[in-house]
Amino acid sequence: MKQVIKTDKAPAAIGPYSAGFKAGDYIFVSGQGPLNPRTGKIENNTIEEQTRQTLENIKAILEAGGSSMADVVKVSVLLTDLANFKAMNEVYKTFFSEPFPARITYGTGLALPNMLIEIDAVAYLGK
Image (cartoon, rainbow, N blue to C red; front, side, top):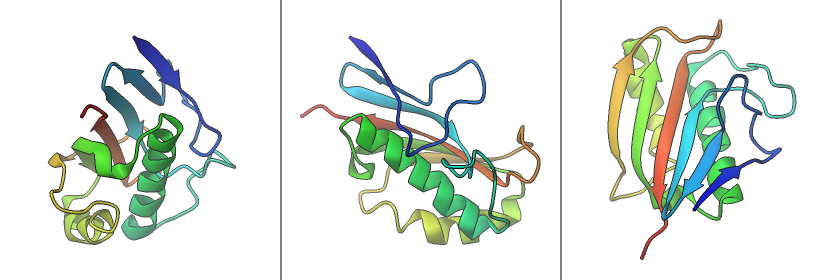
């Protein structure tokens, strides 16, 4: 069983994808960035602010699907500058607790100008 997850508390998809998808015991959250859900724009310039907004967007999608950050088992983090890794981690660890999700972090270019970070997540809802 598959179900698209939509919420006005996270930015709408800006391309041909779903922001979130529930499939069986899992929720898959597409790559989220620091877009303000009300304006659809990037309003923060620091990696700390952008990380916080990105994770708030993921949290909103998970909650709309009946889940939470505590259910996240896998995360991918994309940074435009790996020098931001430490500062991103400081904010990241305020959204997750031990045992932390499995994670990989990449340095890469991102599609939107001024976007410093993108994160996707997988949550497990099974018992």
